[in-house]
Image (cartoon, rainbow, N blue to C red; front, side, top):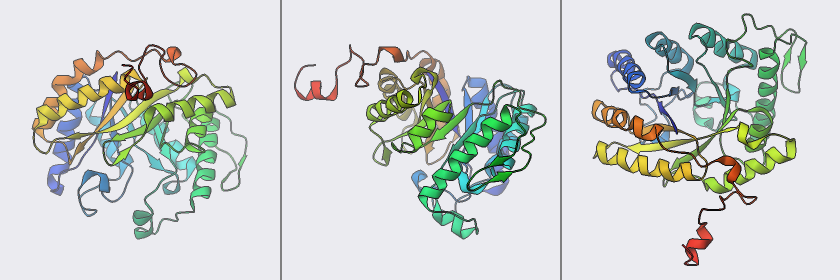
Length: 321
């Protein structure tokens, strides 16, 4: 299983730069696979921190982290489609991909944080329109990354010449990750356009029935003629560092084993409330163990999304396990 971590920010502004530099360098030295910056402008409620707590702009922060590292992959988890014009967003991700030697991912979603958007004067359309804009962004990304400069004319965006020079170093393009678990729209867009999905596994907060979501994704893949196995299955997952960092990491590793058994391949860990030296050290010690977790072969999932050799929830309820 692959392991990523979400970047967090100390309270004191003068400490943010040094702390993020230490985090990035320590994560890379420990063998963590990727670093992700939340693309928000206000602190998000899931951390338990107040909205006024520090939150840095994602792409400026990723540029800083890129200069501190040499191997670790980078991305935003995830950019809300109303926040940036699609052409500018693809240019930003391409620039970082070129400068890092091909280490960027494009993380996108429809967005949900109407409060921060309104506070900063960012237009925030209704849900249906945000999904229309998300699909146009995905189409524009594929077009620009394949070097097609033909005009793009959509319902919400018109690009007369979507030139992207230089192109990204990764071929055919930086991986596209779509965040969210909406079954009618989000997972359909994953099947049609993305290289990875990002689902949520924050116990008691944002917790999906992951086996069900994977079955829905499989159905969408079948409908659009996409190979389900081509799509990387990732989760955003919490790590409670408030009392016992070592115990929190041990519980995390056990949960990752459960997730791997249903086909989750990649975990992106967000600490509660933020990284500190003890928490990061405890996670670093567990990186080899996480990497050694074997993910269930995706092709062994049955038509109902379960592995034939794995007990289902109904089996357990019936006393068959």
